[in-house]
Amino acid sequence: MLLPRLIASDLDGTLLRNDGTLSPRTLRALRAAEGAGAEIVIVTARPPRFVDRLAAATGLVGTAVCSNGALVYDIATRTVVSSRLLSLITARRVATALAAAVPEVGFALETGNQVLYEPAYRMRFSEEEGAELPVPSLADLWLTEAPVTKLLAWSDRLDADTLLAAALPGAGDEVQLTHSGGRGLLEISAPGVTKAGALALLCAGRGIEAAEVIAFGDMPNDLTVLDWAGTGYAMANAHPAVLAAVPVHTVSNEEDGVARVIERLLAEAAAEAGTEAEAEADPV
Image 1 (cartoon, rainbow, N blue to C red):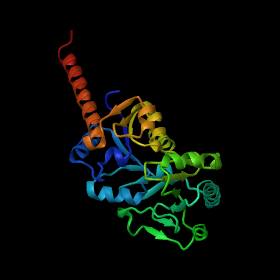
Image 2 (image 1 turned 60 degrees about the vertical axis):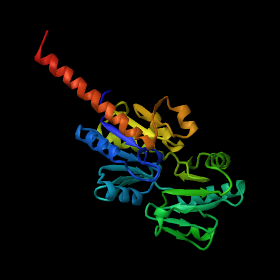
Image 3 (image 1 turned 90 degrees about the vertical axis):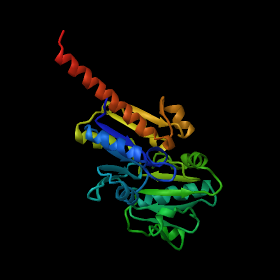
Image 4 (image 1 turned 180 degrees about the horizontal axis):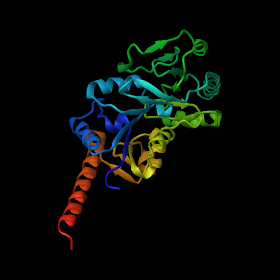
């Protein structure tokens, strides 16, 4: 495959640089790929509101798989196309089990529009100012009537890998557990919700096979989509588990790793087209 029909990319640590920006080189590469006929799909743990801000800054349009696959979002119309929500009853049951296993863990609910958090959840993101809303107590967290895309669990003393290992025994098959590298932050979705699952459904609707897709990622929540795609690229700065599991690597997000792969594929496609044109012009 010289040029894929669809390019799926994570955002943080992958498409974006460490300061959260999209480099001019990467933006040019994405637009060149679109011009050559490839579809660009963002596949991220981030909610739609983050994608909206990125689109406003860069002009990106198209489709985004958000919240680790819980939402499929049309960027141009700011519309949720499909969703797979987490039951509040399940979220509460899993939180109770996790709190018993990990003392002092805090919880929040991601709704796609806002983050509702109880007092023990002290993780804040500067870009989320205005979207993070406190509730008086953990009990109040379970009174929300908003749809829930993810349960977030946070610990100030455990890293995300350790928190994930602690959550697995109590969660069973009730939920999908993963993380995207946030310090001590565990992301909990409805059972079976993954980036790959949402992307596979999207591609099926477009008549696109997995073999016609390339994907980029850096964290454990990207592993499903990197494995599903015809070719998955791990960033050089990826989590050790991702680097070990994914055989094909590119350079880091700070070195425009996604852009370099796209540029190479476009150059190879152009060279192949040129060879074919020469053969037609000068038949043997």
